[in-house]
Image (cartoon, rainbow, N blue to C red; front, side):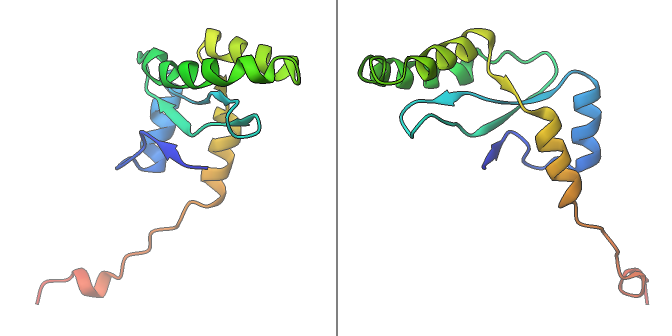
Length: 113
């Protein structure tokens, strides 16, 4: 999944922001077979309204067609939009720790001649 709002941040900085109240959230997307949307990194003190608004209108356009077929998905989608998204911080952080590259600089190249 694509993660937005972490451009230029290292894993250490992401961990620091999460300890201060940051989180990774997703919003349900009814358009694509009830899958979650892009993962958004919400910084401490930032509101999720600007991210939820796009998904709200997208789900509003398609929910009337899916309501008779899958009422559970529609209500789940509206619930997560109302509370500000689904918190996936633990899962995303575990994935980031698993694929974190180790930085081993070549010290010979860093020496001045």
